[in-house]
Length: 201
Image (tube, rainbow, N blue to C red; front, side, top):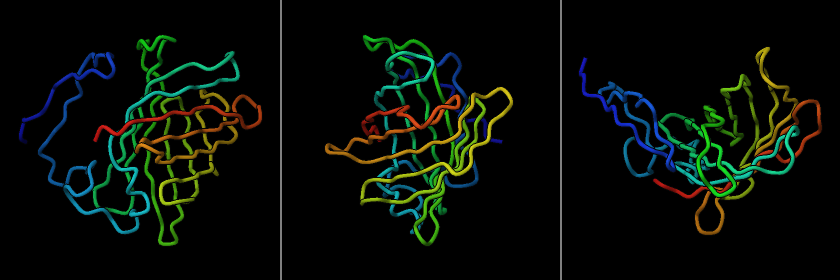
């Protein structure tokens, strides 16, 4: 096996990576594409999702039933594809102080955005805090997408979540904005997350 791997440890808004995860660049299959026009072509079924593809980073506000008021967080989201009829998705967040200083790593989630021939979106998500979700939804304009969770499963140690919905959109200026509502701890659906992210790639 080729041993050419990258061990770099980048910083994200001042948050150092303690150990750089190795990246093997000799896979015998195409690498994921994060910029349209490069690498393998986007699958036709994913064309309605094309505006999402890229690397996005910015800030948002979160709310929890157990906490008073909102608190800020930073986030990076990556949408990529490998030519098949789905987008790969990864999101990483970090808590911020009121003056914008990085405090510590926060939520992580990974998943896949699938789109069928009728242009129904299936979003499969796994969260690091023990929840797996399946959303269904669709495109509500050329640059916005709405999804509602139909399946929510959790481990024995995960917090209770009974409903969730998300709205994503490319807003004026080209940023990616999203809002999430969630029913936590037996309470009804309430605003949970909202953020506006700038395109890096």
